[in-house]
Image: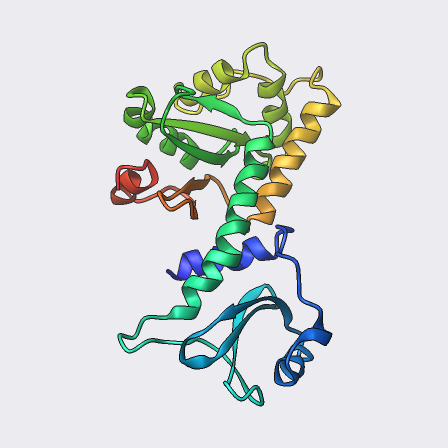
Length: 255
């Protein structure tokens, strides 16, 4: 939960679109008072106990505000039911974090990636990888059973973060006649680079590597492999670094 919460904050600060905000002048006086503390009010909603709720954003974090039935007082924080369920958390996730995650997923889909696995695979994973990253190579190897069975397609977004020459090698892979084969050959050869930095790599290919690296930074990933996948509820998940063996079935969509 903590990792997902941190990812959610990063999504809101990554440039993902936030829902249309409400005009402060239309808000009840106590909500206006809270909004002056730097909270952007996004949505009004019906709350339990005769209260009126307001969803907001404060320093890239979702917040909920509850106005008492008399309209004279407001409380900012989480609301719980009799069973201890956090009613605010689900609302914030549904209205802010989940849409932001889907938007970032679309940004990854629109970025230049290399396909590994069948296009018809029911589960898709995006991986930011550096040609010099040994953990990227290990993840690639561990994912073989799912990829080769047709269950998973891995979409690799090449970046240049480990060595000064990383970006050149990544661009060379994109510049090759068959980037997917070049990447497959690299990863299947125990990470031994058989391709040299290409002086023929175009400016567009170099920009693609820079763009992928910037996108990885926007998602808050501090290293490679940076792995992203969707749950069955279409909630974006992040795993940075080589996953533990027991986490692989979850990432691959088996659990």
